[in-house]
Amino acid sequence: MCQLFNVNPVWLHTGNGKIFLDEPIYNENLKEAINIFSQLRPEFQAYALEQIRNLVELQEKYPPDTMIANK
Image 1 (cartoon, rainbow, N blue to C red):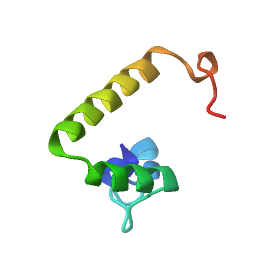
Image 2 (cartoon, helix red, strand yellow):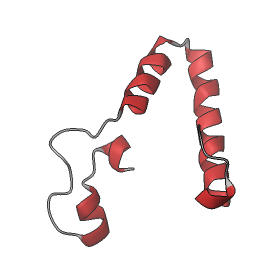
Image 3 (cartoon, one colour):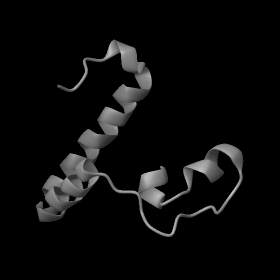
């Protein structure tokens, strides 16, 4: 949520500081994903979003220690 909406994680956890950060927090994976996503046709963007939503649901079902780490 912090990355998507540029929300200050300190504010989110404690209520202290500014709600929004001046600069977005992007890591290299997010930059690459946005670049790839922007190149897709609309029908493939819709499919990709559905898959991302499915991954979020899966992530919420299983704690990190039950998933195979990305190598």
